[in-house]
Image (tube, rainbow, N blue to C red; front, top):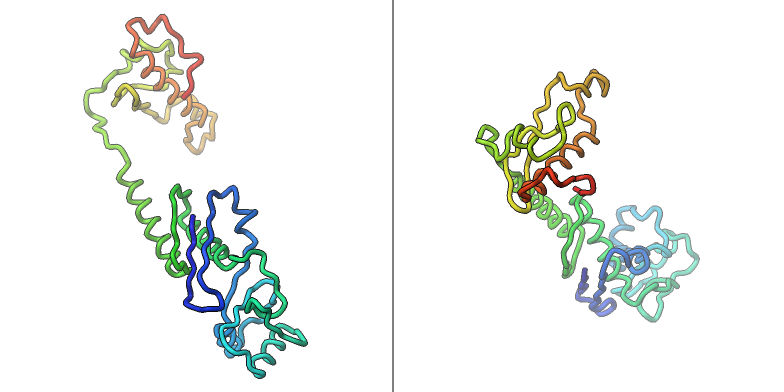
Length: 251
């Protein structure tokens, strides 16, 4: 992820920051502090905000002349007897953690805003002059695309069509027998993919004791059904499937 920063001011100039992977987030991005310009700070002071302001947790770039009236307001807001400007144009005696701390904080904002998508994003992102508004708009578009892709990716099958294997043919391949045969038919199969179907009814033996008032199929049995279906895929490739065992297969 790359962040490019340019507010068109001499005091801040242009900055950029790069995050090669989330494994570097804690060391390189997480502690980058927020920032603002002096003119923005004045506007907030005028409407009575910045009640919990602290010059140790926010960088203020002085982009205009600091007059006496503004200086007094800042002294009162931050409860400091004196306010000064460092040679690098930052208010008070704040030490930057990084020369490009502002750009790093913008990357922090981008990561936080894109987390609103609720999914992991595998991509190279170049954020040119990012901000919360554009970040969240982008996050909404990403989430919309994700939802659409997820909907379009749902396979459709005709459950009434002739199966690839019926239950009797499955028993020719697998050693399992009722009540532990957990696949009734194979509805689709290629050399790399198989889709099986298990008809579950209320008289299944496991419903009697597993949450009797709430018919829930145990997760381990769902995994077993997947394993048996996978066994059909493997064994169907042999001329003599009964000579092989699927004990050591993995899903």
